[in-house]
Image (cartoon, rainbow, N blue to C red):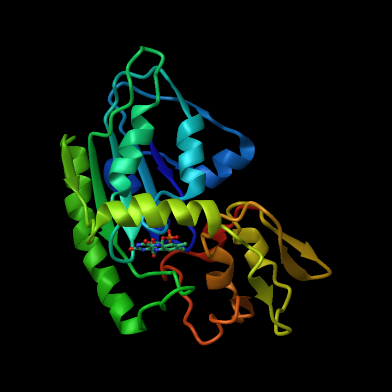
Length: 267
Ligand SMILES: Cc1cc2nc3c(=O)[nH]c(=O)nc-3n(C[C@H](O)[C@H](O)[C@H](O)COP(=O)(O)O)c2cc1C
Protein backbone atom coordinates (compact mmCIF):
# COMPACT_ATOMS: atom_id res chain seq x y z
CA UNK A 1 0.00 0.00 0.00
CA UNK A 2 1.47 3.33 -1.07
CA UNK A 3 0.65 6.43 1.02
CA UNK A 4 1.62 9.62 -0.80
CA UNK A 5 1.57 13.37 -0.29
CA UNK A 6 2.35 15.77 -3.15
CA UNK A 7 2.14 19.52 -3.73
CA UNK A 8 3.24 19.92 -7.35
CA UNK A 9 3.12 16.43 -8.82
CA UNK A 10 6.72 15.16 -8.43
CA UNK A 11 5.80 12.83 -5.62
CA UNK A 12 2.53 11.75 -7.25
CA UNK A 13 4.56 10.84 -10.36
CA UNK A 14 6.93 8.71 -8.25
CA UNK A 15 4.03 7.14 -6.33
CA UNK A 16 2.21 6.26 -9.58
CA UNK A 17 5.34 4.68 -11.09
CA UNK A 18 5.94 2.63 -7.93
CA UNK A 19 2.28 1.63 -7.93
CA UNK A 20 2.62 0.30 -11.50
CA UNK A 21 5.96 -1.42 -10.94
CA UNK A 22 5.03 -2.99 -7.59
CA UNK A 23 1.31 -3.46 -8.23
CA UNK A 24 0.31 -1.58 -5.08
CA UNK A 25 -2.75 0.61 -4.44
CA UNK A 26 -2.35 4.37 -3.90
CA UNK A 27 -3.73 6.30 -0.94
CA UNK A 28 -3.62 10.12 -0.86
CA UNK A 29 -2.63 11.29 2.62
CA UNK A 30 -4.34 14.67 2.06
CA UNK A 31 -7.63 12.97 1.12
CA UNK A 32 -7.33 10.51 4.01
CA UNK A 33 -6.76 13.38 6.46
CA UNK A 34 -9.76 15.28 5.12
CA UNK A 35 -12.04 12.23 5.31
CA UNK A 36 -10.48 11.04 8.60
CA UNK A 37 -9.66 7.65 7.06
CA UNK A 38 -7.05 6.33 9.45
CA UNK A 39 -7.74 2.58 9.55
CA UNK A 40 -6.29 0.28 6.84
CA UNK A 41 -6.39 -3.47 6.26
CA UNK A 42 -3.08 -5.02 5.19
CA UNK A 43 -2.51 -8.29 3.33
CA UNK A 44 0.19 -10.61 4.69
CA UNK A 45 3.11 -9.71 2.40
CA UNK A 46 1.92 -6.22 1.50
CA UNK A 47 4.57 -3.49 1.86
CA UNK A 48 3.80 -0.13 3.50
CA UNK A 49 5.41 2.53 1.29
CA UNK A 50 5.56 6.18 2.43
CA UNK A 51 6.16 8.61 -0.44
CA UNK A 52 6.39 12.36 0.18
CA UNK A 53 8.49 15.48 -0.56
CA UNK A 54 10.99 16.98 1.85
CA UNK A 55 10.17 20.40 3.35
CA UNK A 56 13.11 22.24 4.87
CA UNK A 57 14.94 18.95 5.51
CA UNK A 58 12.00 17.64 7.51
CA UNK A 59 8.74 15.75 7.02
CA UNK A 60 5.74 17.77 5.82
CA UNK A 61 3.56 18.44 8.86
CA UNK A 62 0.56 16.63 7.35
CA UNK A 63 2.64 13.47 6.78
CA UNK A 64 3.81 13.41 10.41
CA UNK A 65 0.27 13.94 11.66
CA UNK A 66 -1.09 11.17 9.45
CA UNK A 67 1.54 8.59 10.45
CA UNK A 68 0.81 9.33 14.10
CA UNK A 69 -2.90 8.63 13.54
CA UNK A 70 -2.80 5.67 11.13
CA UNK A 71 -3.91 2.23 12.37
CA UNK A 72 -3.13 -1.01 10.50
CA UNK A 73 -5.43 -3.96 11.08
CA UNK A 74 -3.98 -7.43 10.49
CA UNK A 75 -0.41 -6.20 10.82
CA UNK A 76 2.00 -9.08 10.12
CA UNK A 77 5.30 -7.23 10.63
CA UNK A 78 4.89 -5.95 7.06
CA UNK A 79 7.86 -4.51 5.19
CA UNK A 80 8.01 -0.70 5.63
CA UNK A 81 9.90 1.66 3.34
CA UNK A 82 9.97 5.35 2.39
CA UNK A 83 10.75 7.23 -0.80
CA UNK A 84 11.36 10.95 -0.26
CA UNK A 85 11.49 13.33 -3.21
CA UNK A 86 13.71 16.41 -2.90
CA UNK A 87 15.36 19.16 -4.91
CA UNK A 88 18.80 18.24 -3.58
CA UNK A 89 18.94 16.51 -0.17
CA UNK A 90 16.94 15.62 2.93
CA UNK A 91 19.34 16.04 5.88
CA UNK A 92 18.40 13.63 8.65
CA UNK A 93 14.73 13.32 7.75
CA UNK A 94 14.91 9.54 7.25
CA UNK A 95 16.03 9.17 10.87
CA UNK A 96 13.21 11.52 11.90
CA UNK A 97 10.77 9.24 10.04
CA UNK A 98 12.31 6.13 11.64
CA UNK A 99 11.68 7.63 15.07
CA UNK A 100 8.04 8.46 14.29
CA UNK A 101 7.40 5.00 12.83
CA UNK A 102 9.21 3.42 15.80
CA UNK A 103 6.57 4.83 18.13
CA UNK A 104 3.65 3.15 16.32
CA UNK A 105 2.49 0.15 18.35
CA UNK A 106 0.59 -2.39 16.31
CA UNK A 107 -2.23 -4.74 17.32
CA UNK A 108 0.21 -7.69 17.59
CA UNK A 109 2.33 -5.72 20.12
CA UNK A 110 5.15 -5.02 17.63
CA UNK A 111 6.70 -1.60 17.29
CA UNK A 112 6.96 -0.11 13.80
CA UNK A 113 10.25 -0.48 11.93
CA UNK A 114 11.49 1.33 8.85
CA UNK A 115 13.25 -1.37 6.81
CA UNK A 116 14.63 0.84 4.07
CA UNK A 117 14.55 4.38 2.69
CA UNK A 118 15.42 6.16 -0.54
CA UNK A 119 15.63 9.66 -1.95
CA UNK A 120 14.72 10.69 -5.49
CA UNK A 121 16.17 14.05 -6.59
CA UNK A 122 13.67 15.98 -8.73
CA UNK A 123 13.21 19.57 -9.92
CA UNK A 124 12.62 21.98 -7.05
CA UNK A 125 9.24 23.65 -6.61
CA UNK A 126 10.53 25.97 -3.87
CA UNK A 127 10.89 29.48 -5.27
CA UNK A 128 10.29 31.32 -2.00
CA UNK A 129 14.00 31.07 -1.21
CA UNK A 130 16.14 30.55 -4.32
CA UNK A 131 14.37 29.72 -7.59
CA UNK A 132 13.23 26.80 -9.70
CA UNK A 133 15.76 25.34 -12.17
CA UNK A 134 15.79 26.43 -15.85
CA UNK A 135 13.62 24.16 -18.09
CA UNK A 136 16.58 22.34 -19.68
CA UNK A 137 17.96 21.42 -16.24
CA UNK A 138 14.49 20.25 -15.15
CA UNK A 139 14.30 17.97 -18.24
CA UNK A 140 17.69 16.40 -17.46
CA UNK A 141 16.69 15.86 -13.84
CA UNK A 142 13.42 14.20 -14.90
CA UNK A 143 15.30 11.83 -17.23
CA UNK A 144 17.53 10.72 -14.35
CA UNK A 145 14.41 10.02 -12.26
CA UNK A 146 13.46 7.11 -14.56
CA UNK A 147 16.75 5.27 -13.88
CA UNK A 148 16.52 6.04 -10.20
CA UNK A 149 13.00 4.60 -10.00
CA UNK A 150 14.21 1.36 -11.59
CA UNK A 151 16.82 1.01 -8.84
CA UNK A 152 14.44 1.96 -6.03
CA UNK A 153 11.54 -0.25 -7.16
CA UNK A 154 13.84 -3.28 -7.62
CA UNK A 155 15.19 -2.83 -4.09
CA UNK A 156 11.68 -2.55 -2.66
CA UNK A 157 10.56 -5.59 -4.66
CA UNK A 158 13.48 -7.54 -3.17
CA UNK A 159 12.50 -6.26 0.32
CA UNK A 160 16.05 -5.08 1.08
CA UNK A 161 16.46 -4.37 4.77
CA UNK A 162 18.70 -1.97 6.70
CA UNK A 163 19.27 -0.13 3.43
CA UNK A 164 19.14 3.66 3.48
CA UNK A 165 20.16 4.97 0.08
CA UNK A 166 19.74 8.65 0.85
CA UNK A 167 21.11 12.07 -0.21
CA UNK A 168 21.65 13.70 3.20
CA UNK A 169 23.72 16.75 2.25
CA UNK A 170 26.18 18.38 4.63
CA UNK A 171 25.42 18.90 8.34
CA UNK A 172 22.26 16.71 8.26
CA UNK A 173 21.56 17.12 12.01
CA UNK A 174 21.69 20.90 11.78
CA UNK A 175 19.43 20.94 8.73
CA UNK A 176 16.74 18.62 10.10
CA UNK A 177 16.88 19.08 13.85
CA UNK A 178 17.38 22.86 13.87
CA UNK A 179 16.22 24.39 10.56
CA UNK A 180 13.51 21.77 9.88
CA UNK A 181 12.03 22.11 13.38
CA UNK A 182 12.10 25.90 13.10
CA UNK A 183 10.33 25.71 9.72
CA UNK A 184 7.52 23.50 11.00
CA UNK A 185 7.07 25.65 14.11
CA UNK A 186 7.27 29.17 12.66
CA UNK A 187 7.27 29.16 8.84
CA UNK A 188 3.92 27.53 7.99
CA UNK A 189 2.39 30.94 7.55
CA UNK A 190 -0.07 31.54 4.73
CA UNK A 191 -0.48 35.27 5.42
CA UNK A 192 2.27 36.35 2.92
CA UNK A 193 0.25 34.81 0.04
CA UNK A 194 -1.64 37.38 -2.05
CA UNK A 195 -3.27 37.53 -5.43
CA UNK A 196 -2.78 40.12 -8.18
CA UNK A 197 -5.53 41.85 -10.16
CA UNK A 198 -4.69 39.48 -13.04
CA UNK A 199 -6.40 36.59 -11.19
CA UNK A 200 -8.98 35.01 -13.50
CA UNK A 201 -10.96 33.32 -10.72
CA UNK A 202 -10.37 29.83 -12.18
CA UNK A 203 -10.34 28.30 -8.66
CA UNK A 204 -7.38 26.01 -9.49
CA UNK A 205 -5.52 27.23 -6.38
CA UNK A 206 -8.55 26.38 -4.25
CA UNK A 207 -8.89 22.92 -5.86
CA UNK A 208 -5.22 21.89 -5.52
CA UNK A 209 -4.88 23.12 -1.92
CA UNK A 210 -3.87 20.09 0.16
CA UNK A 211 -4.88 21.54 3.50
CA UNK A 212 -8.21 23.24 2.72
CA UNK A 213 -6.54 26.56 3.60
CA UNK A 214 -7.82 28.45 0.54
CA UNK A 215 -11.40 29.73 0.37
CA UNK A 216 -12.91 31.57 -2.59
CA UNK A 217 -14.71 34.85 -1.97
CA UNK A 218 -16.22 36.84 -4.85
CA UNK A 219 -14.09 34.87 -7.31
CA UNK A 220 -10.75 35.50 -5.52
CA UNK A 221 -8.74 33.19 -3.26
CA UNK A 222 -8.13 33.91 0.43
CA UNK A 223 -5.72 31.96 2.63
CA UNK A 224 -6.96 30.82 6.03
CA UNK A 225 -5.07 28.82 8.65
CA UNK A 226 -3.61 25.31 8.35
CA UNK A 227 -1.27 25.88 5.36
CA UNK A 228 1.45 23.19 5.07
CA UNK A 229 3.47 25.16 2.47
CA UNK A 230 3.08 22.56 -0.30
CA UNK A 231 3.12 25.53 -2.74
CA UNK A 232 0.56 23.89 -5.04
CA UNK A 233 -1.43 27.16 -5.25
CA UNK A 234 1.46 29.39 -6.35
CA UNK A 235 2.94 26.82 -8.75
CA UNK A 236 -0.31 25.78 -10.45
CA UNK A 237 -1.77 29.27 -10.98
CA UNK A 238 -2.13 29.38 -14.81
CA UNK A 239 -1.62 33.17 -15.00
CA UNK A 240 1.08 33.53 -12.30
CA UNK A 241 -1.21 35.81 -10.29
CA UNK A 242 -0.31 34.34 -6.89
CA UNK A 243 2.67 35.78 -5.00
CA UNK A 244 4.29 35.11 -1.63
CA UNK A 245 5.51 38.35 -0.08
CA UNK A 246 7.52 40.60 -2.38
CA UNK A 247 10.08 38.20 -3.82
CA UNK A 248 8.23 35.73 -6.04
CA UNK A 249 7.04 37.87 -8.98
CA UNK A 250 10.40 37.51 -10.77
CA UNK A 251 10.77 33.83 -9.92
CA UNK A 252 9.79 30.78 -11.98
CA UNK A 253 7.04 28.29 -11.26
CA UNK A 254 7.15 24.48 -11.49
CA UNK A 255 4.87 21.50 -11.55
CA UNK A 256 5.54 18.01 -12.87
CA UNK A 257 4.90 18.02 -16.65
CA UNK A 258 3.33 14.53 -16.80
CA UNK A 259 0.80 14.98 -14.00
CA UNK A 260 -2.50 16.56 -15.05
CA UNK A 261 -3.72 19.33 -12.80
CA UNK A 262 -7.00 17.40 -12.28
CA UNK A 263 -5.00 14.60 -10.63
CA UNK A 264 -3.96 17.13 -8.00
CA UNK A 265 -7.50 18.33 -7.22
CA UNK A 266 -8.50 17.75 -3.63
CA UNK A 267 -12.03 19.11 -3.96
C1 LIG B 1 8.31 24.29 1.67
C2 LIG B 1 9.31 23.53 0.86
C3 LIG B 1 10.54 23.23 1.38
C4 LIG B 1 11.49 22.49 0.64
N1 LIG B 1 12.66 22.13 1.22
C5 LIG B 1 13.53 21.35 0.56
C6 LIG B 1 14.73 20.90 1.19
O1 LIG B 1 14.98 21.13 2.37
N2 LIG B 1 15.59 20.16 0.46
C7 LIG B 1 15.37 19.84 -0.85
O2 LIG B 1 16.19 19.17 -1.47
N3 LIG B 1 14.21 20.21 -1.47
C8 LIG B 1 13.29 20.96 -0.80
N4 LIG B 1 12.11 21.34 -1.40
C9 LIG B 1 11.84 20.88 -2.79
C10 LIG B 1 10.85 19.70 -2.84
O3 LIG B 1 11.08 18.78 -1.81
C11 LIG B 1 10.88 18.95 -4.17
O4 LIG B 1 10.79 19.80 -5.26
C12 LIG B 1 9.78 17.90 -4.22
O5 LIG B 1 10.08 16.93 -5.19
C13 LIG B 1 8.41 18.48 -4.48
O6 LIG B 1 7.46 17.42 -4.52
P1 LIG B 1 5.95 17.62 -5.01
O7 LIG B 1 6.01 18.11 -6.43
O8 LIG B 1 5.36 16.26 -4.91
O9 LIG B 1 5.30 18.60 -4.11
C14 LIG B 1 11.17 22.08 -0.68
C15 LIG B 1 9.92 22.41 -1.21
C16 LIG B 1 8.99 23.11 -0.46
C17 LIG B 1 7.64 23.42 -1.06
